[in-house]
Length: 152
Image (cartoon, rainbow, N blue to C red; front, side, top):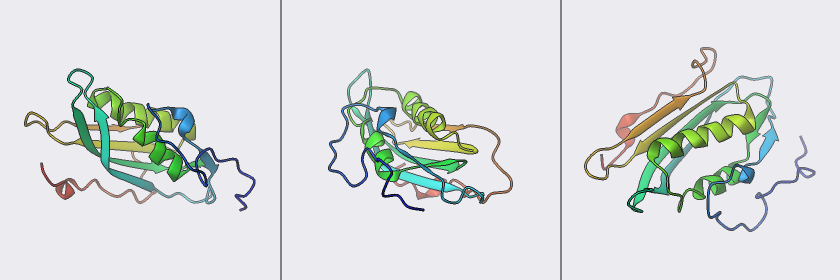
């Protein structure tokens, strides 16, 4: 497949980190293996947002798993989109679920799951989990390994 005719908004360009999360930052590409069922995992161990009440930074380890259908997400655009949350004030649940909903709207995947492991402030970690539908049985989907998160 030739990608030289695709107009990417981020890939191959100098980019500025967005001031806020904007789904228009996300680029999709036709799935090069659309006849295969497979799982894609993105791990963002340094996700940052801002508490909407205290303006204190919040940190999370996000794990996004999805089984593509017609499209896959372009990874640099996803990175920039996630960085747009850096100065965004929202609760953990809002950030985590909004990311999932934006990706589902863009990609229309066969299945998507997000796990947000939020680091504690005030002694209580808040973990947020969401998935678009029942986990597919005919695809290798890695388990979520809770023991890899240090500082909890």
